[in-house]
Image (cartoon, rainbow, N blue to C red; front, top):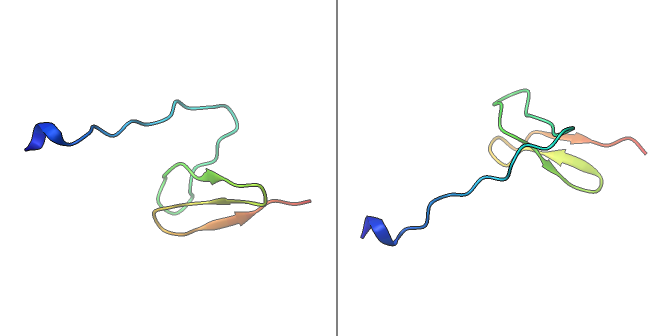
Length: 47
């Protein structure tokens, strides 16, 4: 059964990516914000 599970694939590091100051996880880059999926920390982008 363990062989049926897919291995997690991580995206390669890209310059300019942000990491969460609380937990150190790479943050998602949205149009208007950076968001951490682990602890829900959010930084809003300036317009």
